[in-house]
Amino acid sequence: MLEIKKIYHYYGKARALEEINLKVEEGFLDAVIGPNGAGKTTLLRVISGLEEPDRGKIEFLGERIDDLKAYKIARKGISHCPERRRLFYDMNIADNLKMGAYLTKDKKKYRELRDFVFEIFPRLKERRKQRAGTLSGGEQQMLAIARSIMANPKLLLMDEPSLGLAPKIKKNIFKAIVKIKGEGTTTLLIEQDAALAMDVSENIHVLEEGKIEMRGTREELRKEPRIKKVYLGI
Image 1 (cartoon, rainbow, N blue to C red):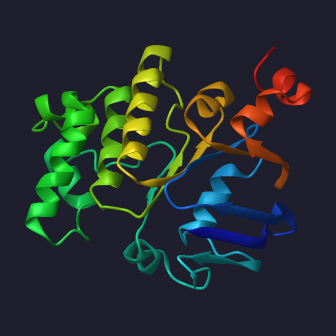
Image 2: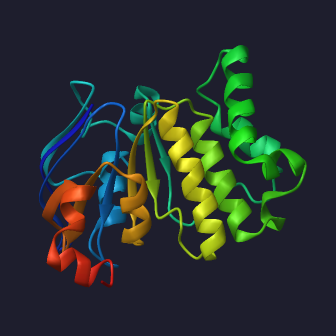
């Protein structure tokens, strides 16, 4: 579904991404793990068109997209749930969801998506008239994910969904991510909490200093001594 081929990206002379090769198959949930500053967020921004790669190409459903603007990539079916949520804080939950569904023209599909996000995040349904800016951090993250789902994406990009959340809330968020994948939504997850990422993802890509240093299934990487020591604390 998504294929990244030899992508390079620089900020001035500083290299952010170097020769990134990555493939996500349809229906899978893949994760990219790595330390702060490894280039994880930059990778998602390049995929979604918020930043343009300096070299290489990106294909989505067999079509090259690295030369497209972000709004055109969104129309192709890629939805980006960004780091730190980026909600419409003065708008209530219901209106934030409507903003996420701006590409969903079919009213029946809109209701199906809304019912699904209320099913996986019942708290949002209870508080749908509440302003986003008054929600807790966990509730805001739920809303950010729900808003991305309302776009009815073929591919969902998620950037650090557990960032700054309490352990119990993290688990609830990741249960929802599993349900989203269960509905058939292909997902690429960026996550610093490697243990959580490995619990839900089928394939793992390890990004360090702008390079993919290791990749494999979660079962394979859980056996790697370096992964155990550096990322799992075993």
